[in-house]
Length: 131
Image 1 (cartoon, one colour):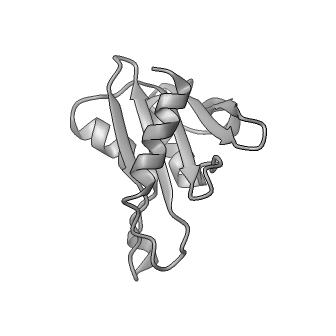
Image 2 (image 1 turned 45 degrees about the vertical axis):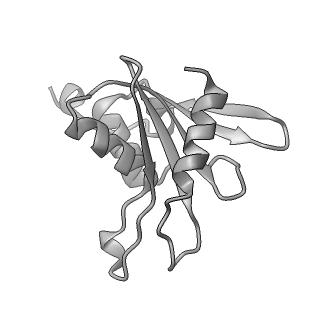
């Protein structure tokens, strides 16, 4: 799938954000290796520890439907620019797809910054690392 189309889907997902505490809506569009797309948005809670990030929601939706291998994810904020994943999201990404690409759109340059999960979490752990 084209990166711009994935970006548009992430922006669509952002519209469903429930972020009354931070006022920082986030949307994510996750592409599986077999071509399926899963969307996620952040959902906050007054008990902050119960909040879930857009990236993890998209990944958990995919995993709950049997998908375990991901090729890329686009993460966006309300201004349309990319939002880097938090540490918890990086670890969840590493669990399933350390080579997955994270695409962060830069509106000013009209380009994507692209990172591999392994590069932004060099000491992550998963079943492969623990063997």
